[in-house]
Length: 255
Image (cartoon, rainbow, N blue to C red):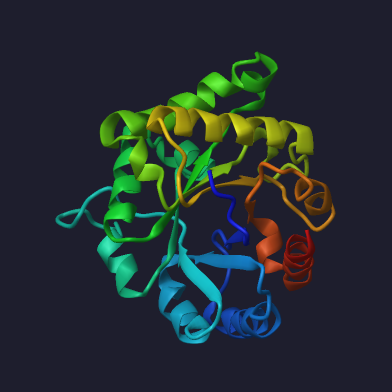
């Protein structure tokens, strides 16, 4: 597998922001983050602000995208947003399978697989979140849990669909808890995920990346970026704090 020379930073704004907040926020990102040459930075915003993100970030080195997508192509699905609609705003990244959505809306692995395929169909990069609960980790079945989340996609669409894709190992017990996985835990699971998918593909990928998410901040990012298996990070709360966001990017850029 070829190592991506650029670290990947995906920022999940979650349900934050406003038209006024975003003016200063997006301007600060464009001014302060555009000069990182060793990073691929993607900002995943709430649906209503995709147009604003496009207007502010077009022409920069910073990508943008969404935090979710519908599993449907189109039709009578009130409140849903399709992959084609996201592509209309030149979205580059789409988060799928985030545990906050899985918990709130009971998304199945099959639904997530269908969303993953829709994202790829419109030539965007899916950011597939996988991870285990604390009970599952303490029971020692974390690899079985994570592999089952991945295998549904492989069984339906084949392992080759992971080319030009991103998998975010985001242990559920770490999200919003201020208790990130240790570099050893993250490294072990990320290596497992890479080996599992490549074994299913029976080959290496040209462009497939594994990133870590779950209470990433400027302090633990220093340790996380020492892990050889990590291609980057997925940040949540820290993404709406420009100082934290900037420090994480600076750490990644120099690692």
